[in-house]
Image 1 (cartoon, rainbow, N blue to C red):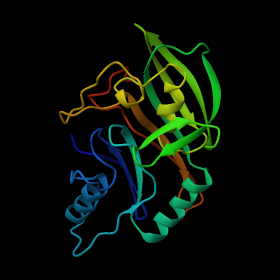
Image 2 (image 1 turned 90 degrees about the vertical axis):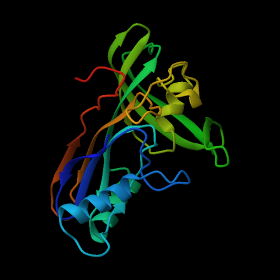
Image 3 (image 1 turned 90 degrees about the horizontal axis):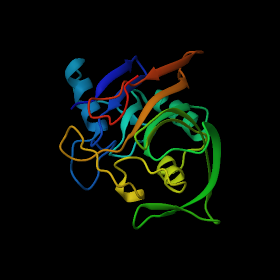
Image 4 (image 1 turned 135 degrees about the vertical axis):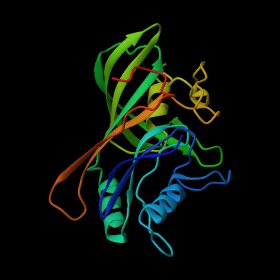
Length: 222
């Protein structure tokens, strides 16, 4: 499964990343979203030489959904600043094992990351992490949640859900019992970056990008 272009103009490129594709190059050597985008732009626009693609945020490899890239250095810089300042509105869909005791709410924790193992846990000395959630549906011991992270910590959604006995399906790293196959033959999480709302880097307008769920998504597609 290849990325799908959701939005493109002179400064912005939004893609629907498939689960299993790294956002940027890593030690696996697998084709990354950034490299795919660079080659796709080169071919579609017949661009000679190097093509600029600026990475302004990331999704974990087994997560699908919308990733925003900058097509110019000005666009990338201004978009990056919006992510750093927390003004980008992010919405995720998650399929979890179990069900919350409430239909909606806000959770605040402190998270600590072990850089060597790339595992995040709750800890008093960590950084603040906050998200709001809303239950969209429940069935057969699972729940479909809409998640709005207020902060942007590494593995935040995965850890805050798991710590409350609600691991994301397929997330064996954080306590899930179920595996979920991805379209590339690997595995994926029941986590999808559904939408981003941001300020256009060069025009005074808000932009909303919504990513449809892919065929390997383990939940409803509404």
